[in-house]
Image 1 (spheres, rainbow, N blue to C red):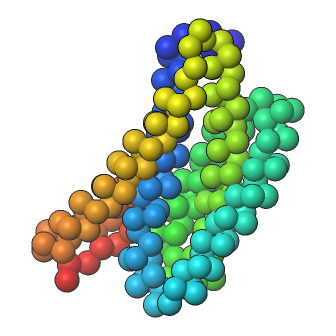
Image 2 (tube, rainbow, N blue to C red):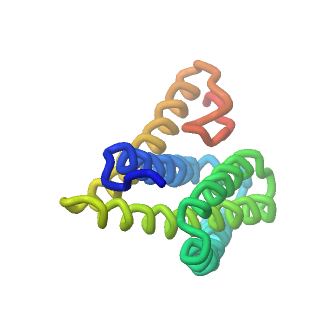
Length: 178
């Protein structure tokens, strides 16, 4: 079992927060492009967001119980994979039902990841002399800033005629010039 007071444990958990923030921030920055690609109004986009949120609420309950029974580490890694898969699926969704399903998958991953990475953060904090939760949440914020900024940068390059298509901040959103 790793020494939770060790800086490596802190960095590992901070990395989870940063990855989560990157995916969530990048997803948020792609919402205008998603709306355009799906050809939906604000109500259609709301369906996608409600799908994500509802799935996250369910997943937080299940993920918390699983983390209590099996350990947060055994939950956080598969949950991360679900979040990544959901965000990637959103990048390729061409219809509102597919986007809502992909958002629900991302929500399932995000909810369980959120609960389990916070549980790991609590364990790391308890093993240390000084509090660290604010630093971990700062890792989420830095990741969110990075994810959103990467999407904005790639969109600007595409608009400038650089012909950038593909992974916008790790999200695979197709961006077309003009």
